Length: 97
Image (cartoon, rainbow, N blue to C red; front, side):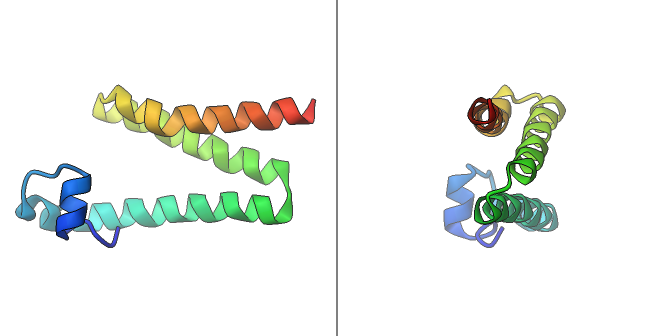
């Protein structure tokens, strides 16, 4: 979110040009803010020790990963985003049982 147009962000995300980063800055900022809220929700669930909150936010991450992979046709997004969230959900369910 903060480094999208900076050399570190361009390198980390393998972006093609500085112009592309400027053209997509608003989208990247929105995505970064969204991910920040998901992270805050998961941290809150840990602080509150509330499995229901954790399951909700992990479900949101899973859905976002599935949609991201589908909409961009990049299965890598599913593996990087949805699989860890699914593993988190399974871990919570196993600990409940």
